[in-house]
Amino acid sequence: MLSKFKKQILIAAVCSVASLAHAQAWPSKTITIVVPFPPGGTTDVLARAVSTKLSANLGQTVIVENKPGAGATLGAAQVAKSNADGYTLLMGAVHHTIATSVYKGLTYSFEKDFAPITTVALVPNVLVVNAKSPYNSVKDLVAAGKATPDKLAYGSNGNGTAQHMIGTQFQIVSGAQILHVPYKGSAPLTTDLLGGQVDMSFDTVTPVLPFIKEGKLKPLAVTTAKRSSALPNVPTLQEAGVPGVAIGTWFGLLAPAATPKPVVQKLNAAVTQALKDPELAKRLGDVSRLEELAAEVETAERELAHGQAQLAQLDARVNLYRQYQAKLRERDPEGFAQAVQRMAQPTLAWIMSRTRG
Image 1 (cartoon, one colour):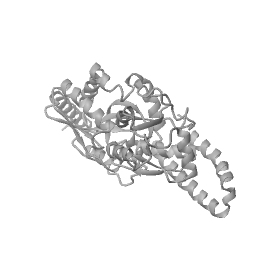
Image 2 (image 1 turned 90 degrees about the vertical axis):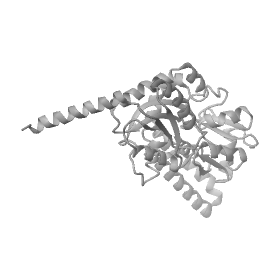
Image 3 (image 1 turned 120 degrees about the vertical axis):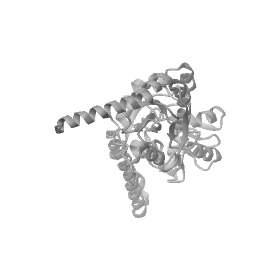
Image 4 (image 1 turned 30 degrees about the horizontal axis):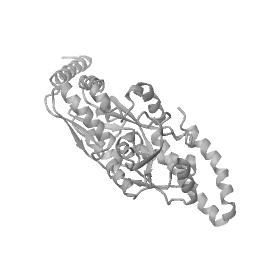
């Protein structure tokens, strides 16, 4: 009889051979990239751009399926539960690292249930307002957000997304009080922004850039540490007087965690080859700074590694801040402004300590 140790070696060998055989036969059918947002946003644009080149590189059809809702968690859950065979992939983003602090009933773990294939892009977010808005600078917005608390509203792609976190940080650092309106994605958000239903957004540059060029939206600042090559004349939030907010949105392709490593390696090679294609690079030129990606991905990952706890803490701070302000108004309306100023310094120090690498 075989010893237990020999049996384990035999099983491992059989699994290894089976995995290698699967990888050699893969892909033998259509591959699906799930986008957890509606069509039209950055995630969707990137997925469709990559899918075309990926299909050519792999010699197999690659389609995009939109599964929006619940801050990108519905689409992620679908992929996490799918067969780990390399035929169902997720175009993920920073949102997934934050979602667990917002959605307590998730049926998957982003850290345990996904295998990263490769980073696709790092895209700057941009603070924009309607072209008809009376606000022409970040300073104007902050002043209005302080003078009339919760009268202004900003839209995001949903609770727990990068836009939500940026909006929360913006309020903490600037002291402005702005309502958060979550949407299912960039397309419905941009529609309402153009229609005047919301005052501003911190969306990625992709869905708003065409309207900026058409003069329908005004860009006031980008949220990354450096200016965007797509909007070189638009200042950073730091330059505009709001320090401590330096976040972009990374996007990457992921597979279910148990996907055979040879398949993941094939996908990595095929996507990397696609991203080097001059036509695709030109197409993505206004969307992402691919030439700076390698240098900035490490920084982005470091900034966002603590995003889950950070968002929850930021929201808690905002709520406590507002409760305290309400009490001060009731007790001493005249001393309210002085008290707010006293609170600003420790609050700013707190957020700055948590945005350093």
